Image (cartoon, rainbow over the protein chains, first blue to last red):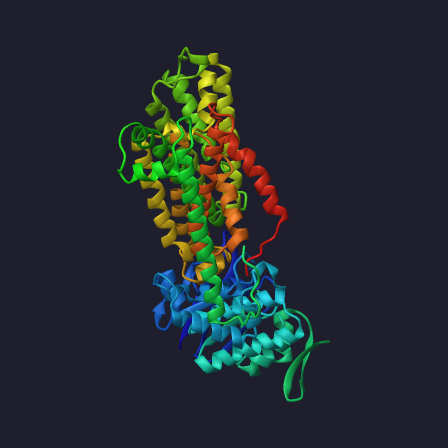
Length: 250
Length: 359
């Protein structure tokens, strides 16, 4: 088990955000965290790499307690793509090279540069390599931050709504490249997802949060119309179209 | 400025060519600074040729020119270079960690704290009083007390900002606002002091705030150099951390950066530079603001290049301003602080309306 989470509790002053949340992921698995706004999805993701410190509970990364690891030690194994990222006056190449930061001692080596080049080619960003970030579209920027996380060569990849800024084609492109990288490099992916159908299409495991707690967790067998209807408070039906599960609000 | 390449293939080689261009631009700026420095040493009421200057610096001449260069012109030129470098790198780092393009040594209350400290010393300890006979020029009798007091004022302002961030969890954005507020607070304090003191003291305070490179002798230059270059080394050591911070605090944490520590110490050293330079030389606005912006337009925001290049540009700008201040209506020497703002503001406006070319 690369990441194993047990009994996480988190609150902002008196308001409970997470209550005894637990799950685990294995290498090469894609886990989607699902639930309504305010269910605690993003907060859960941020506790995983110590951006937020949970009040209680244990997070084991490769059998080491995350709260006892330094930020650098965590960054060597776990990459995080925030929901909010800033565009600035860095080139795309530099922004992706920044993913090598945990590995760089004093200056980037030829290996670092070659790795960045490879990732830029795979993510279709090569032609933008020397463009400044503040000249990119939202979709291109989203690809850059994901490319940066891949450059980090993590064992666990945390993604907070990786497709929220993307059009249909880029949603599929980005998730496909993440999935390919995850299977190729045996990376565990934990992603907060809003689009249930994209989640169903790309993930192996699901964690349904409802009002600070885990409502259901497991493989595609937990994604029943009943579970989803209750977790989201909207009645839905789950159908199979071209051998693919789809959720349709009714 | 360098134009776009013909075929941007986006690979490693293309990237390396791009970073080489940045290094070349930095070398060009350094060369310009060296040439200007040579001119600045040779120009003055006792005209010397650049050749004489070079010979003197190499210890090949004696007498008249040697005294002028070693005891007057050289410390002044070196002070301008060191102070310009310091103010500019402090500005670059402040803009990064405070996430605000307006952050600079003179905009977040540090310089105003120094001015208040200086005013307090001039009035409180009579460090400044009497005027000399010659043309009403103002003498500051005990410059050491004024310098120390100015330094304490500047660091007090800094410590309040760092304290708010450290223990009250104030965001970088609010740190800038707190700095603005402190700036007004200290300015008001200075104003009150001026209101209740005699006109000689008021003149001394105003004179102090003008900013004058000529105040520094070799001793002060030594202290300034240690602080500026020591801090610069610290900043360069953290250049990847600052690059990560440019992508937002959460992303930086995800990349293994101890964000709070990086911000606190960056702020501390940037303020230490400001406090040291301002308390020795007075207030010189705009260098710390305009130099990083100019470099960003020229070679982008990568802190590996932005920080050292800002230092070079800051040195160049302050030396140019000081040389202009000495030469434009010689033998009258204009206050360099007024010249930096006078030239800095139009330059800044020009940068705002003009885009970047380097690719």
